[in-house]
Image 1 (spheres, helix red, strand yellow):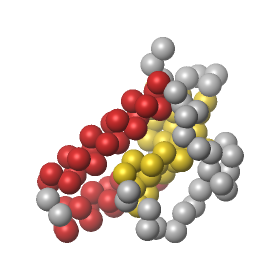
Image 2: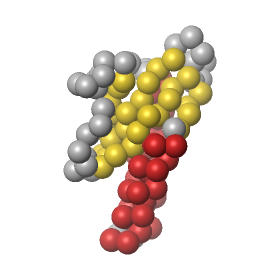
Image 3: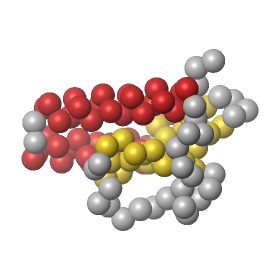
Length: 97
């Protein structure tokens, strides 16, 4: 069964911040590459939600590396088959999770 993915407003804000940076400093190709990598990670999570390591700060959360510059933090709700993407961040930002 496919899981439902929900992005929190914080995760959307983090994603938009990274995209804004890419738009200012790089090309549309980098943005497309990032979107493809995010989709690959989401596909992996859908197949095996617990495959990524748990967050060091909160063991109810998982941290999935998207690429060398970005990662996402998510929570699994097994009862309702929902993955909530809590945050999307650059690796150089101070971690919150």
